[in-house]
Length: 190
Length: 182
Image (cartoon, rainbow over all chains, first blue to last red; front, side, top):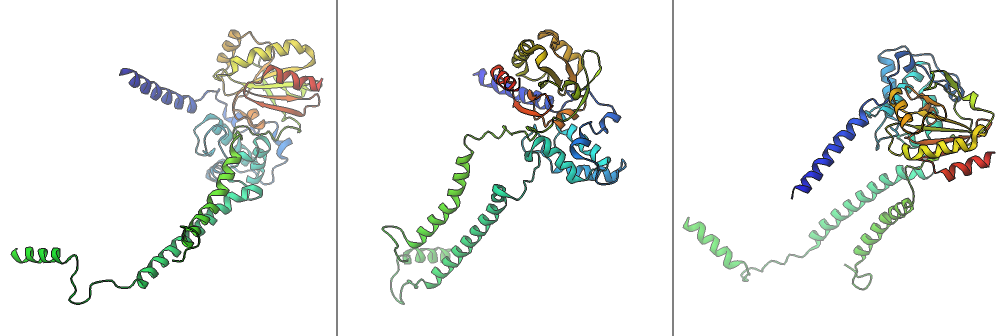
């Protein structure tokens, strides 16, 4: 009987340790200068920056957060780079910040990551080809459901209105009469 | 209600038809998903020049550039000491690097790892047979679109990525890909 308990405790411990190893720093910590370096491949891959450099500050924080929110953490299940605590995602966010700080616009940053990881790295798929199903089907399903609900309600209202009244005619005995008489008697008796 | 068939009213047929119209496309899409591995993502880098890098070697801290690997086929293996399947993959890579000798340049790039752990791991697993580079901050892993380790990229002598393998690369696959380039 103690075996199931041991298994459950072992699994819980594995989950806790697994989560810890997932979020802790496995790699060496880069220096601040190294973090803001672009990486020697960026100029060759992404070309020159389209805009002006963005100085460190709230504006850079905000745009980094926005761009990171649209990118998929490669080692997580459906978490954005902005939301994931994984080291890979934090490295990606640092790279996004470095590119934006250097003057690369969000489209250039996204294209740079897509060139390395493929379209999978973008959380919102492009509305083209088979991806269109992801945009069309939910709307279509909602509309069909809405029509079905409205149609069913109208139909049941119509059925009730059309239903002939089948109550007892005046003076005619009804099957509920004994019960009604009993209730009236009980009310009368208090 | 008017009967539209044996035992089924027109309304029931309409509901069943509408339900099938919604459910069947979903079943087709789900059916197509069988046999599709969502973790297998073709690298957009295949056929393109490999992203350049300049990383310090684990052994002597001297920077190693991608350009120094060009002129012969190269194998770039991203790995880590905490990776469960890397110890199984490593002997095959060591054996291949010895087999091909000067014909092929093998390089390991350490992913999210620390130098002392890397040195200890290599000492336990046959030594630093080919150069190991340290990717602090993971910028080279990002440039190569590394999802996890191990991942292996094979480059031709011009530095073009010809193949990417996710997970431990089987020796026969490695040999087939390299023989194709030699």
